[in-house]
Picture 1 (cartoon, helix red, strand yellow):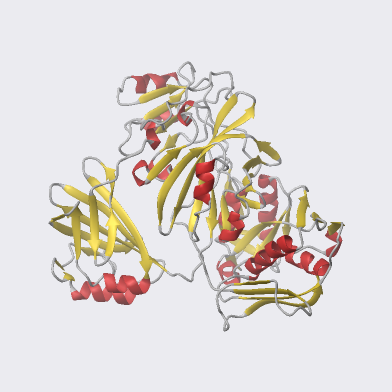
Picture 2 (cartoon, one colour):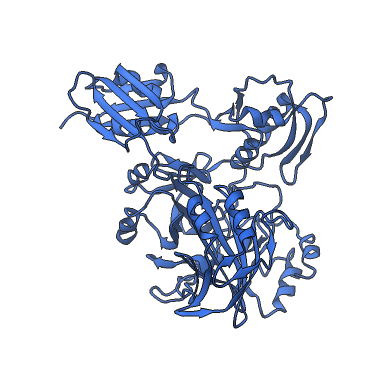
Length: 590
């Protein structure tokens, strides 16, 4: 946008958002336009690509006639697919086309997998040299991209084929960005999504952004939304900031009168404290670890709860999107997971899917509705082989047997003749003196075996704990303690790449972005900076000397950002259990 960067520099800080403005009007329920402009349902496209036995539906990507599509399949299936011809259809009519480009992501022009106008025959498919390059060089995790020009001025801008490994842990294609708590706030926000009318959110009466308002007022293309005292940490929301575009949402179901989130002020009081969405004992901050389907199913009767530090924010309503490896995105607008239609849908969840919570409207004070500008996601692990048996010592048969036959898989955990009261602290990864018992009516000896070549020991502990809770009527409560974290080693080889023996240097700190360029700085200085910026104690559990010199880039704008940047050093930042206290209750037999 011409002159945009110069206008941004003219912004000044003003008052924080108040809740005195009237509540935005709810759209009429049951109408096609009942959702805000950026979420209005769009009819599916008539176009599709047929590549061998694989049918790939296309969705509108941009005007006038630009489309995109995507699919995922295992490596062995892709090797067969690349050697077969493809066709483009509009409904049942085959259309002539030309393959403009074929390459592997990320884009490397003139690399071994980059072909501009590759030799292609409608009868035979790609030339043998192209087929050979892809059959021999592509690996699980690779993404293959095609650009195709079709008759009638139709363009398929991106046709993505993701090569998957069914034995790898599930990784969602769409990641939730972590919060970045920087120093700068803005008095306006521009929303630009391809194919949608652009929007300006602003306080039209604010003197500090008056020139911005007057500029956009002259452009009839923009819809201007007046929000008294408007402030935001994100001055521009574009396609890259959307979890899913309007065109990608296969279906939208509205179960509550939807409020236009764009007409609400942003919630601004979440800088510094960690933000977390809890679902029973499950947690996303903002992306969860991979949970098993049975763990998710065990929480379907529980509400989701939003926390900023130790403070809980009441949730008024939310958008929930279900997407996954073989699941096109579908969206629900609701105010409770227990609404019957949504509850029924949640019981149909499958492995290798993600549940996104987005555009949450919170009510920090009665009648004060605000948009919480952070999305969250709960990931459901792929179904992978394991074997778990649990029985009481001396019993003829185990009371729990689950998993596929994996007789060759390594045994991750084996317990023989250990008391229930001894097993539980080990599963919870705490010392026995951190556990407080409130009635223990049964304390049998147990024999437990967990084996898997694909699930970790921590996965196995979670599975076992779930079954013991159910079998022995246990309630496990963690007493709240001040947050503290452990810095742990995750990948020693990766850490070695960031260590240096050169002369000590320094840390260049960007106060605006809250990021650090570490130039041969001692680990002790990095730890001090981390604790100061995150505002929490961090314990060094590394075997590396604190005088060791590090180099690289770190982001301390939030706990989630710190975790992400530390992972590039082969390090992890985990909530410490060292001072935690656990209360275990056993309900008596009825």
